[in-house]
Length: 88
Image (cartoon, rainbow, N blue to C red; front, side):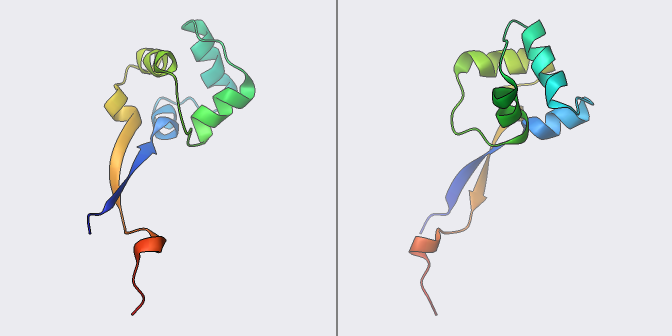
């Protein structure tokens, strides 16, 4: 059986490396680059693992932070799903 893959959202790590430690700082940076957003939306992007993201947001985040999409999103192999595991 092929291993499952998952997409890892690395924005929090990138923000920490750039010393952007508060969600409000991230939100202000996005606003400065033409992408105003609510605190809850900024929090989900900065601290969570968003289930979907608009291409425009992805572009602005990359532009503002000087990174690429490949820096923000990485594909990792995960073990087999619980559903497909066989008990011994």
